[in-house]
Length: 328
Image (tube, rainbow, N blue to C red):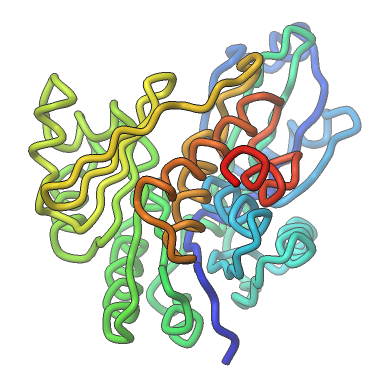
C-alpha cells in the first residue's frame, strides 16, 4: 500500500473559469462578485452560453491538495464525481498534478459538481456553484486503505451540510485514529458553521486533532465577539488550532503554547480566493515533515501569500522553491 502524507476529503468540483462582462451578468441575473448555488438545469444553461473557458479540478480541499503536492508532499484525495465528462476532467487533472484520486465514479444521480467562475474586466469573480455528485458523499465512499495509509486525514467543512457527509467524516476520523493517524478539519465557512454549530463542536471535541479556522469562523463556532475569547474557548478541544487573521497573520494554539505568526509581505493582493486553503497546505506539509508548529505556520503563510498575489486559487509558483527561498 502506498503511503501518503495527507489525504483530503472534500467537495469534488470542476472549476470552469471564463472571461465575461457586465452585460452577461445582467442578462442572467447574476450579482457581480457574488456566489450562488444553482440547480443542474441552470448550470447546463449557463455553461452553454459561456465563452471559451478553462476547466480544471477545484474545490477548497482540492486547492489544499494542489498546494500540498507543490510543496513536495505525497497526497491523495477522496471525493465524489459522476461518470461523465466533468468527472473525467476532475480525475485527470488531480492525477496530473500529482494527487492520487481513485474514488470510483458513480453511474447514477446528479452530475459532477461545477463551479462556474465569470471574471469581468475589473477582476471581479462571480461564481455559480452546482454541487452535484460531490454533495452525495457517504460512508461507503471512504476508502479505508487510503485513510489508514495517510499520516493526516483532512476534512473540508464545506462538505458538512448533508447528514450523510457528516457521518462519512466521523467514519473517516475513526478509521484514521484506529491506525494511530491524525485528523484535521477546516471550518471553511461561517454560515455553514452557524447552520451546524452543535455538530461542528462535537466533531472538533470528539474527532479532530488539528483545526483550521479563520477569525470569523472561530468566533461563530463559539458564539463570542472577541478573538481572545474564541482562543480560550477552543483551547483543550483539539491538539492544535490554527487560526488565520488575514493581514494580522495567524495564531497557532497547542495546549498552553501560543505561536503568533506574522503574515508574509506581498506586493499586492489581487484575489484572496484560496488563501485559507493554501495556509492549510503549507502548515500540514510542515507538520507531516517534522517541522515545529511555528515553522509549519510560516510555510502556510508563504503558500497563502503566493496565492493571493494572482488570480485563482491554485499556486502558480513552485511552492517548494519559494519556501526554500523565503525560509531556507
